[in-house]
Length: 295
Image 1 (cartoon, rainbow, N blue to C red):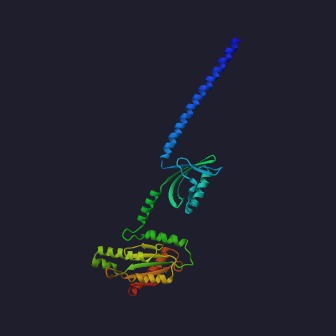
Image 2: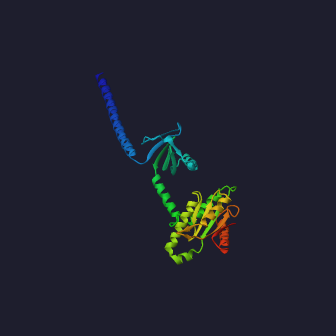
Image 3: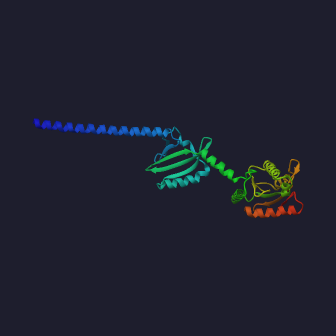
């Protein structure tokens, strides 16, 4: 009998020791996991990335590492189509990388976004790249401008006009105005190229003050310029052309020949309108210069 009791005690003691060792090992594992999580949260809280998760079942969104109300972010209207494509890719289980404009309150910023769905949870990472994006836009804009006048260069002028015409209201009046400074080569030869550059800069500064920010101003040659006027009246076109013909720089009258072509009436793209305006402009030059002709 005593032998059975001893055996039972040994078995119980062994079981208790196994359980005790098991709990010690589990506690050590939990402690190690907690330390890793603490390190992760410490790293995440000092990181530029915003980590968040979205529960597809409860439809709740929460920031993980920063006290940010993720529900306050709204996708910019122009990026809504991109968001639809992102959702389609997430449903397929793909990891998505994208750049989106997000609005929070009254502020809009560019964000780099990484998303991955695991089960019913979408894990995401956001980083504000607004400064980098704005710098890219500044460099892009600088490359698209004529360095002397600040007008768009020929390539960008053509592209902007063609893009705008593709969706423009055909019921309104839009006009392409082609300008050429008369006898500019003679002015350069007589007074020097430095003075000629001053004349160009002064001329374009006067043009900029005369037209709206919505109009497209381009330099497409040495002394040749394009102005595309959107949603304008015939009276305003004639008024602006007349005002340009009255420009002067340092008491020197600037003679300008101008040809005008109407969008859709004379053409529905830059090339066609340019050819028509160019013919009108040379009619002015043949008839004495410093004036304008409308197709």
